Image 1 (cartoon, one colour):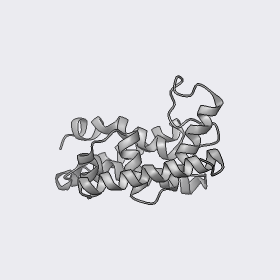
Image 2 (image 1 turned 45 degrees about the vertical axis):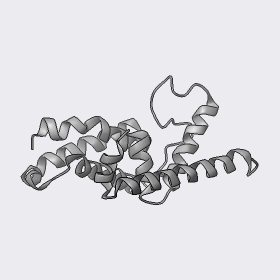
Image 3 (image 1 turned 30 degrees about the vertical axis):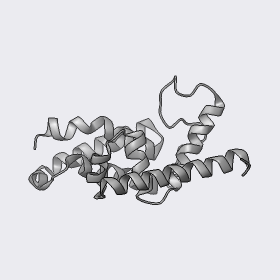
Image 4 (image 1 turned 120 degrees about the horizontal axis):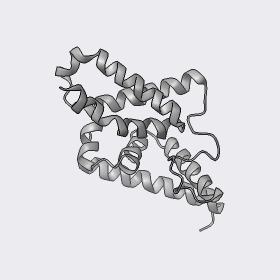
Length: 165
């Protein structure tokens, strides 16, 4: 395995994963930096790693969750902090509130549904990549993802419309 092609090439994906968990770009950058350092320090193990992205993603998720535990922070970003740090994405306070709510709803999903939504809808991974990453069949990925999206939709509708259709 080569550090530049097999490790560093996933840096952007790892950053988006860390950002989705932490809600803070500086913290996400720190997590990715730590993961890159740990990956380099564990280079003797590289020959045993079949799926570098899955390995790196798991390290990133663990590192981000550890950071949240250490700071005793809410695993969600502060109110009004957009899920994605793009100026054109959030055009109004209502949109910012909607993104914050959506992030909370994803965080409330049970495993592996939360990971499925992040990997597919935030990271843009294919069903095949997700199935390999989570050790599920592609059919399971599709079914669980469908159920996760329905849960998010139902909960979102209840919260935004006070249970009225």
